[in-house]
Image (cartoon, rainbow, N blue to C red; front, top):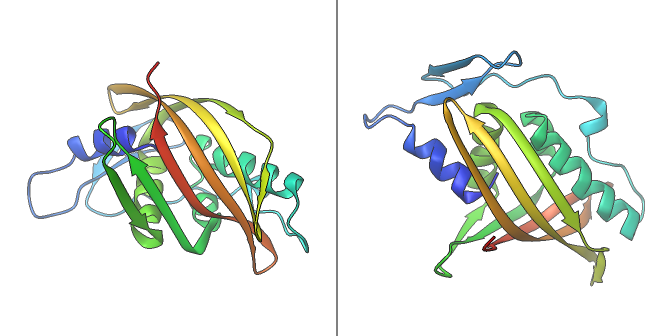
Length: 181
C-alpha cells in the first residue's frame, strides 16, 4: 500500500505502451497479464461497518478492517473503504508530497493488493481523536512484502481520517510520512 511498494510494482512493469499487470493467485502463483488482476471474493469480515453514529470504536474498527483487507489481498473490500472524496497524500524521504485522488489511489491500492505474494504488517495505532465530523487515527506501520521474487519493507506514520458515508465508516484520507528506522 505504501509508495515504496507501489514504486516496486512500477519497476516491474513493461516499457511498452501496453499496461502490464503483475498478479498473484490465492495459491501464491505469480503471473503477468495485460488485464487487471481478477478480484478475490470478499470476506464479510472485511466489509466496512454499518454505523448510525461515528464513534472512536467505529473509527478504530474501520482502520483495522481496512488494513486486514489489504493484508488479505481483498481488492474489492479495500475499495469499499475509500470515501467518494478520498485522497491519499504520500511524502517521500526528502519531504516532497504527492497527492492522489480517489480513482488513482484506488487503482494503485487494488494493483498492489493483487500483486502481493506475501505481506506482513506491524501496526501500532493511537486512540482515535475527534476531528470535527470525523476521527483521525495515527498509525505507525512497519511493512514487509514480497512481489514476484522481489522483497521490500517500509516504516511509515499514517494519519488516517475516518468519516461516515452512507451509513458506513470509511476512509476520507490517508497521509503517509516515512519514518527512518
